[in-house]
Amino acid sequence: MKVVSRSGDDLAYYSQLFQIPRVLIEDANPAITGNVLPNGIEVQIPGYIVQQESRLDIDFAEIALQYHLPIDGIVLLNQDGQKPFSVPVRVMNPVIVTDKPYEYQSLLDDLDVLSCHYPFIKVESVGKSVLGKELLEVRIGQGEKIIHYNGSFHANEWITTAVLMKWLNDFLLAVTNDRTLCGMDCMPYYRDMSISMVPMVNPDGVDLVLKGEEAAEGKVDVLKINNGNPAFYAWKANIRGVDLNNQYPANWEVEKRRKIPKAPAPRDFPGETALSEPEALAMKELAIRRNFERVLALHTQGKEFYWGYEGHEPEHAANVAREFEERSGYRAVKYVDSHAGYKDWFIQEFKRSGFTIELGKGINPLPLSHLPGIYEDSVKILMAGLYM
Image 1: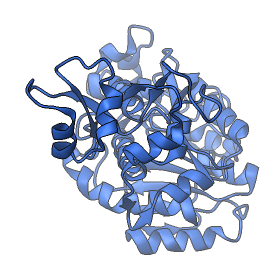
Image 2: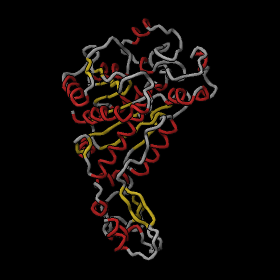
Image 3: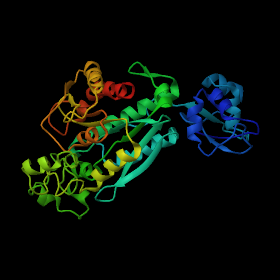
Image 4: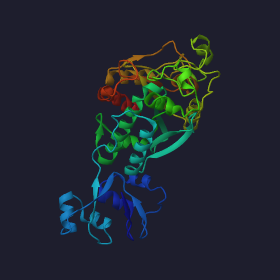
């Protein structure tokens, strides 16, 4: 919601007027500096929308009483005095629907909606896919320590994007409405740390799984890579047939030597060289640029998570893993016979905690009917990832 300032107003007053933490209003209006606002400045108020009051015979006092708002909140939004009056309405429920086949356009549309309602979030392109789709990072918070989450490294695991986007919406509702999430007050985490999220690392592959051969735009012979099969539901790789989570310089040579596909394939081909794919390289460069404190990579399936790599994990990672296990019921696995993954490289490179979370149980792609149960378990891990 946008309001137009009056001479002498300030952001602290707007925070009090609309009961939104001042820090959120400040972050939604980074161009505004100083305490007292001049007349006529447009100010974003997060967590509100504007509705029109259809009745023409109503006054400000009646509207304020009906909507449980201070009268000045109505006055501020209707400085021209023209009817029908505009009414500021607090957003109390999710503004996006994640229970759907979550293709790339869904991500773009939903990020636009969230940015409109919560303009303190930052959405930035951190690279491009093979087909030129922007790899989008969402950032929230003010702290120097950055906790990173990502989803859809693997194409047919696109339900992980839906999980992250649902959590994002729930977190934004919590900080703007003074709510808890999994019993945790979210505002202290907003102030003390930052969340980085790349909800869809592999947009080309996700669209291939959900939309079929047309998603390749005629630029890659995906039908040939898929052995002539027009159904791509089992496809994990990027559009060129490279497994993005087998691309990292953490014993990549071991994976290259032992993986059965020696050429582009729907899954498991680690590429001709490490970091040959733009999506994998972008995620590496992002970790270095942001200097993540912790990484949680969402995959499916198995109701377990992997938290160690070759002894490079820090001592406190065991405590974090134990907390994840207790909260979610997922099984903690320290080591698996696997290399070249994103969390493997992160742990090796930064000596910080990294986790591969295998959401749900079944056969990929997991059906949407599993989403509520998956979210109920995984949101406990996502929240615990912030404070441990």
